[in-house]
Image 1: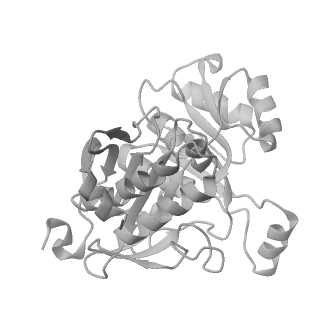
Image 2: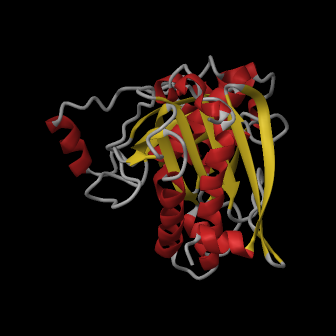
Image 3: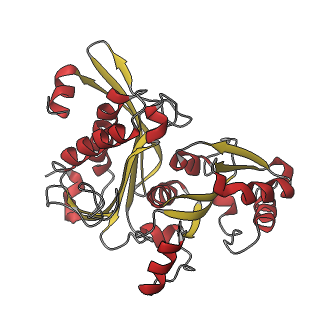
Length: 330
């Protein structure tokens, strides 16, 4: 058997197999790039990801994915994925982070997934959104989700040995962030607005010389878990809590005894054990390039990380037409 099956534990060699999954998702999805239909982009990626996962040697359970079983026919929460052999793992997937971006032909869309030891992935999965603060290693011990924005930014600046006016905060460009943006401005920090795709943005704050220092605001729960997996591999911290998007979700929490004040850390989200994170670019972005359609095939660009191997591994993979046809079951 392959090395990643040894003793039924996660090994970094499994990342090579998982890369096939995200590569399949982007190759399928880019067929609809720029056509304006984000649902078609998402569905094509979901179909390719799920069919490829079926051949991966692992016994996986989707902990965070496309939604609850009654909302998502594939890659739903609780679905078993893999061929049932090998390591028992929890799985987080985002077939395309940035479906709107890809449907409009814009940069920054990726496919991403992460695995960790069975039973260690934990998140407010009944809620699609979380409020998040994400920082790199130097500031991981100075953030508090209950502190005012100005206090957090002041503490982060001190930890990074910067003036607060030299900090850059990444925020999703959404109407719900009106007050947050005002608080950041009043504190004196700089703002980088992004339209979609906060997995890569969350990763960048943990990387040196990326030009961004912290991510704040409300974003997707799957993206938060995936970011946590990457941060376990390269260092950094995410703290977050569930964000009910309406009164119905607040009432649901009260009825089910769910504590919406629980704060999740990186280790709360993906545990303290082995973790693998992989992503493949669909369209060009700051961290990873998109799919290149070349004569006779396609060239994919990916990154993979694991707690088993230090650093970020960049991978280019070429698929010829016959491989693509097989991949897409044409």
